[in-house]
Amino acid sequence: YSLCGWGWVRMRFCENKNSKKKNLLLTTREVEVLSLLAHGKRTGQIAYHMGVSRATVEFHIRNARTKTGSSTREQAVARALASGEIKL
Image (tube, rainbow, N blue to C red; front, top):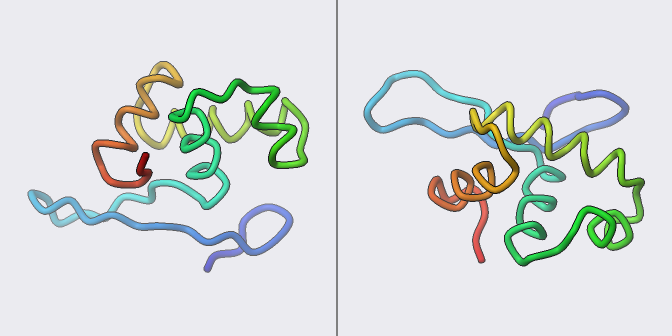
């Protein structure tokens, strides 16, 4: 666990088998948001489901895009699926 922002957030680490460096990937909330996106949910539906604002969902999507090196939310979902961070 790591102190992040307003509270404790579980962080997941991934070790690239072809590299010795470890990359911080996604928080629990980012995983949840990307999983819901992968299941076809829209931003408003995700916000309602999680009990947060649309802006908060967009914040998590933006962070996940940055961490996965993606330019779109769809690409972030695809990379998270490929890396095993999220599952369908």
